[in-house]
View 1 (tube, one colour):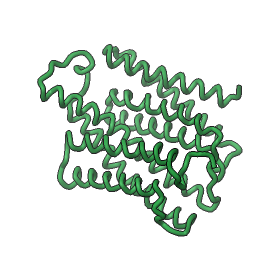
View 2 (cartoon, helix red, strand yellow):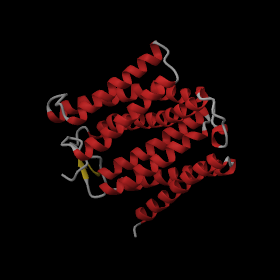
View 3 (cartoon, one colour):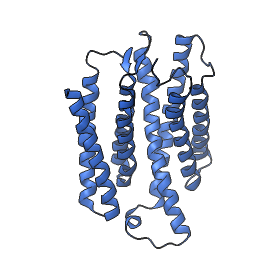
View 4 (cartoon, one colour):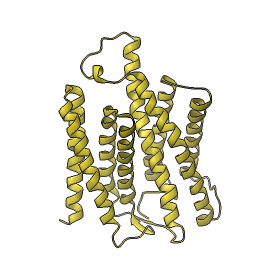
Length: 275
């Protein structure tokens, strides 16, 4: 067993333990378990960072396993989680970040033998602007989706005047969930736009035209329009609460479809199937 394989096992174990601890800690209202979850996830994130660095040794962006990009997405999600937690100190976000990061990391092993081949002239710019900004934007919307689901859950309980008990009593006010949505939208939309623009520039250089009506491009344009609507409604019309929560959940759902459904099941320049 190689050092990278041992490192991957350690990362998975830490993410699993982090997920279990945050879930049990929130449900059982145990502060020690919540703190332990933070440290376990942080330790997994640190090893994850080392693993990404080691995986690049002797490799280039031109020829790289597509599994690496899934692991990079998992890493980006936790990077955003720690950033949002640092800004807002909302521990419930770990309930979204840890399991989703774990799922993407484990899923990367499905792509272990699939390589991505990029033209050398633009591969650095492609990764830095296109992949990087889209991954960060997706990670922000993951946080917004988790906050949105909990917003709807608590909003329904409050509207029906259901007595709060256990896990519910430790959740923050509805305004805290909306703060996550606001941060995700204000930072996520510009990042997604930059990712889209860099993608169109890349397409023009690589394939001779900016828009080829590839399924991935179509779905990405749909996501951008939804994102733009939410950004505009929050900024110009002051949308808050339930509407923004529902919109964030839908944007996240379409992003997941774009990432998994389009990339795996459709013929596209971005296919994750062996070529």
